Length: 414
Length: 200
Figure (cartoon, rainbow over the protein chains, first blue to last red):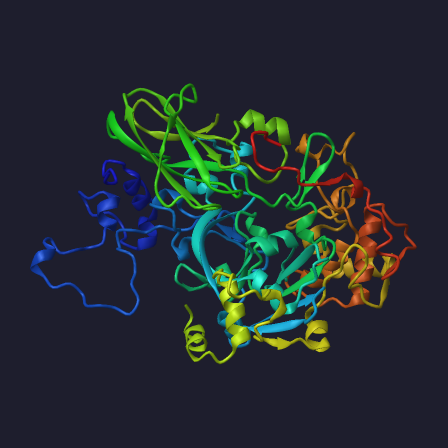
């Protein structure tokens, strides 16, 4: 199905960015939107276009952007509502850094692997690229993703998918399996944890169970066919499929193998989950199943009743998405959505469902189930399990409200 | 397949290497009954003690990684006022950056249910060694990695004292710091979520 042109998101966004584009003030008789539009020939078949170029760019009509909330700009969110399929363009992959983006010369780069190993080793970037490699298409989600809608901060209706859940992205990651390096250095079978350390100003560290290292951890140097972007860890990062993004330490300089967790600052009041029973869960690394409808969503407006395709993404850090159900009546009834191929483990999965809007108010929502049998919970179920002031892992069911005039608003949680 | 591997496989220049590569690629091991762990590929170089010492700065709860040196609460107070207070508040109450001092944890570690309860070193951090590790590696924010071991021990002593965990005459060093028992230590439990039907 063609993307419905009648959804008016583009108009809303274009108007919002008119000032940045610099097309100045609207000319009399023109809307701000028209004034900001790039100039193109009236008939492209009557004029030669520009020649081939060294590096391509987006159509000037497409201006997807990451969104940063605070002045400090320590994170930015992926514009999920502007994307099709499952791959996030590398320049739109979400960011979260703790000491800015370091500038690293790949020729100066090296990775130290030491600790409980037979042979402590140093690997250059060329060394890492020389090892047998592998690629995997996997999502990464920040465990703080969705916090504002769980905590019900501020306006609860004028929120885009990007504002709600933009701290999740999917890429094809290429690198060498960490297990390959562990064999190279002769990692001890008695080791139970490893420390990953970055070379940013935060010298970011996280402790990770060795089971993850042997299972599917990747020392990544490639993303979507090119070297990692600087903000994604250039030249080398750790990538832990299905695990909260913070643990996939970027700008990786050191791995230390040990027999106990190292208890870093990110394993204290950060990245732990206090529970209503008076304990706090630690090393809650795996991301549970979740889904989000990305179209229609705020600030879309449906131009009239009839057939619309509900589209969104679903993912689980534990495996494949087994099914996504979509409700058009606020959760009273659910229908199975179609899943686009490929359906990959620990990866965004695109779902679609044709839906007939009959006019009048409606509440649409999606519910993902993964191949462990885990289903995305309602808000009340998650609240009962975690309490109101938990700070991570917000995967409850999200809803969108369609108003009688077709306006789409964030509908909160089911 | 990377160019160098194709080349090596064609030339057959190193049988052990090729065997290991094939196993790593998941090729049939029936004809190649050799364990990959037995044969390193010989890529990379041995790390020297100096390579390791230069960047091995982490500190574990058992004290592994703590350097020589020491610091007192009084010394820490002076350094804190000069280098930390502008971001973390005069007495660690928090300002533009994180609060460092909090002692209240409610009736029963009520952090999940009471949104007004701040989480900080004194009421929520399980290990005191984390304070050394993080302060030394990443603080002060605008001059990261510039504190000496003595300065760091002193700051840790001061912040622990502000949190009413160590007395005013405390001296922190590589033996006293790992022995500090944090109030929240026993509250932490390993992740028990495993997928499946139950939401935990």
